[in-house]
Structures are given as structure tokens and as C-alpha cells.
Image 1 (cartoon, rainbow, N blue to C red):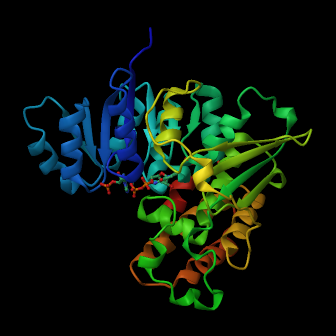
Image 2: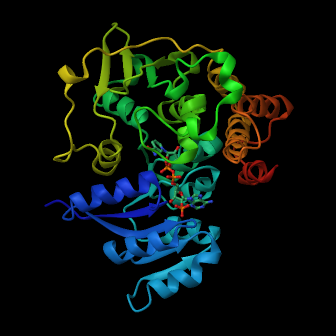
Image 3: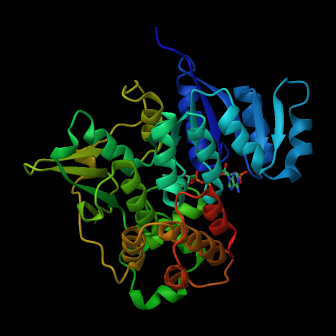
Length: 376
Ligand code: NDP
């Protein structure tokens, strides 16, 4: 008999969060929701809670608490508010798996709280591992918690590694579309507007990751995320541009054999796999039609166009808290770019400056990591 799995969903109102709920409603006999959380979109959180009937709904922005309570009055659904309530529910909520779909460093503390309590985490919030990968792995070793990747590239690598032995792996190859500016004239990058950066050719995602895909900071974050998930030396992790986003990533073995995982660009597939691993559950979502897709293209990334990739390698090679600074500086710069305060190339400059100025702190210290989150 298959057990009903209770999902604790952090960030339910985002692009990934909504897709998690689509997966859950596709398989009502397999999934239910233990709790839902949002930051500011309180009306959507209320509507989701009325539909999915979790035990608890949490709004991180305390300004939304009164509306949340009013919206869920008489339902028996408990209402909570504040950033601390997110970590509390991740630790104590009655979930079989915590799916963290919060965007940015705000997702780090809930991930830490969940793994400390020995809870498995289906992780979409890549910033958690980039900020605190060493600490999270350290905690998982003692608590027994596991991290299941949701990111499509890491899910692809995970699937390619199934049944394989570590010693047979030569390298992993992360693919990336190259985003909307793969062919744009470099001399016009100063003029890139937020609206242009928010137009991704293949994927529909939240604003931050869409800008990260345009700069390719996203692939840099994924490189660091892969390091903490798969424990390979950075020299054995490559990035390859693949504009069609059909090959989600690959693993090359020591006999020269290469395995790739393919699919239509639809996050429901890796989300569901993270929730059902090692099973592939029946779904009726669109199938990949390779004949219709036609030719697939691959090329080396141009580091002049995408300097974020070189910065990510620098941060990874320097280790310690450099990846955390790489993440925080990018997160702040993307926020400023979206407000029109800095230009597109200045995102990279801000991260470079922050990395150059940084003096390493202790990557296993929660206080040091929180200190980096609060720095301006
Ligand atoms: P969205 O911006 O669409 O959603 C983010 C979610 O996090 C929302 O529910 C939002 O609440 C909540 N949130 C935002 N800030 C805070 C905060 N300070 N405290 C608590 N909750 C907060 O992001 P995405 O769904 O696109 O991305 C989520 C994560 O998944 C990111 O780390 C991203 O890199 C990763 N990812 C996303 C993919 C995608 O296809 N979108 C693919 C692979 C990885 P509210 O709506 O109320 O503001």
C-alpha cells in the first residue's frame, strides 16, 4: 500500500510553489499539504489554504497576519506570522518532506531548521546550499536528513547517477539556455532594461531567477549547489550552453559513456520526482517530441558575455564564506537592478567588488552566515 505523503510547502505562492500544488492536486491519493507559507501575497495564500486545507498557514510579512486570520476564520486552519514562524514550522510542522520554494537567502534558516530536526528537504531554494552548503551537509550527516534536488539540472544529474558508482563518474555537465541575451550585441548590455531581462525564452519563473538566468548567475549558483549535492571537485563540473533547454544536464563516466536526462521544460516533472524518488509516478503532462524539437545545439559559454560564471568558480575555489558573499551580493544587486538603480553589467561588478573585499568567516557558523545576510 502506498502511503499518503504530507508536504510542508514553504513559498507556496511563487512559481515553484504553485507548481508543487499542481503536482499535489494531480495525485490527491498520494499527497496532502501539512502547511503553506507566503511572504506578502496573503490573498493567494488564503485561497490556497481554503482549497488544500493544510493544518497551518504562515505569512512571513507580519503586516498580512490580520488578513490571514480573517480569511481563514472558522476553518480550523492555524495562522502564524513572521520569519521565525517559518523556521519553527519547518522544524516542528508535521510534514514527511519539507519542500522549500522560498526565493533567496530567506530560505536558508528554514532549511537549516528542517535538517536539524532530521526532516528530508526537497530543495528548490538553491540559495540555501550556496549560502550554507557545508553547514547543511554537516547537519545532515548527524541528523540523517536528506536533500532531494528540485532544480531541473540537479534533478537530471541525480537521475543520471541512479544505480551508478561514485568512482565511475568522470564529470558532470550542467546545461543552461544562455537566457535572452545569448546573441545580443555586447556593446548594448548597458542599455538592458528589467523588462528585457525578465523575458526568458524557455522557462516561466519568478523575477529573481529570471534575471539570474539572463546574467547566468543562476548557472553559477547551480555550480556551487552541485558541488554540495554531488561532492565533485570543481574541475570535474562543466557548464555548457544549450539554448533549447531540452537536455537538462549530463553525467560523463570514466569509460567515456555519457548519460543525459531530457524532457520538456516543465518544473512539475523534477518537483514530482523529488517527492516520489525513486519512483516515477504516472502523469499526463506533455511529452517530449524530439522530432518536433528538431536540432539541438550546444556551445561553450563565452565568459566575456557571462562573467558571472568565472566569479562563481572563484567563489567556489576560495570556498569558506565566499559562495555566501557571491549569493548575497548578487541578490542585492538584482533587487537594485529591478528597481532601476543600477545597470545590468553593474550586477556583476557589485558581486566582483564584494568578493574582493571579503575576508573569510566560518562557513559552519550560523551566526557568521546570518551576519553576511544582514550586511548592506
Ligand atoms: P518566486 O519569486 O516566484 O516565489 C518565491 C516564493 O517565496 C513566494 O511564495 C514568496 O512569497 C516567497 N518569499 C519571498 N521572499 C520571502 C521572504 N523574505 N520570506 C519568506 N518567503 C518569501 O520564486 P520562484 O518560485 O521562481 O523560485 C523559488 C526558488 O526556486 C528560488 O530559489 C529559485 O532559484 C528556485 N528555482 C526556481 C525555478 C523556477 O522555475 N521558478 C527553477 C529552479 C529553481 P510571496 O509570493 O508572498 O511574495
